[in-house]
Length: 444
Image (cartoon, rainbow, N blue to C red):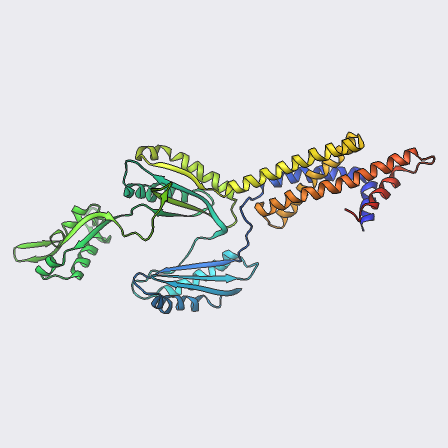
């Protein structure tokens, strides 16, 4: 087999050289447009379902939420296994599918089953939702926000309502998780003694707050000339406005919400926090969609952050970029491959020139390095493998084998041709090159 390949290559050397140019050009195109990621997609196709169940214990979450969801999802096509986790107030169900399953079709099947089970959830439990489709190493960027003059509540509000929506609009971004800071709330802190004094209960406070903050249609009024649409003002924006809500009437007096409770703007109770360089702040974790190019998504997210510079300066918020940036690992790996390629080429040229004193043989050996790497990149692309730290590391190691093989082959051919020229009866160069190459096939 090897003899036939070498013989055909020598016989049709012009075609082989033309194919080498074609492979080089196409390989450069593929390499410049290849997807780059930190790690390959090592996780099987899976769909993660999260359901918030405020106030329920882990046992109640398992019995009332996790169990019904597992039963609904079980039986989906190509389903391999189901894993679940029930904790205080939260259910997480992971449906794992067989290798090769179309993940988008799997999500559609799961979504149809979740629609049916949502109506069966206990009162107060939110509808089950599928987490965004992300890659195995989905985290592409972690940034921080701090301020020396603004409160943590202001910084968190800026992150939630300005930075996060803009980053979610970047192509390739699946989700942006926000941690730390203080989430703004309008809180109603009931004063029990005042409530009892007016003969009211907590349910009266809850009902009044719902009426004051609800948004509902009010219909319309028909007149002979026009239809007038009625609108209700239900979005309370300030504590003072909410405090004026009427709870009850006691004779000639009116009991308002502010009479039985403190209505104020305050942060919601924390379940976690964040610090940047030892200072309290807000962290934003950007995750990419399944199959997206980590490097491209990172650069697009960073451009979006640069566009928000005027807004940050107006809010006096300091950006701490790239607290964690996986794209840097990919760029470092590519730089290492380029350095290995350059170093291998220099060593080949030096070794061959010192031992053979022939620039032609050195040039021929050098062509084997980029041609082999570009061929490998084409094969990886056809197989759907991304350029990641593992594949790039393998290519860097393979350069040593390519250099070794090219030196052995070219040096033996050069030596045999020199001996043939010194022979009284020289053989045709075709046969000499063929025999010289086959002599070292076993070694390389």
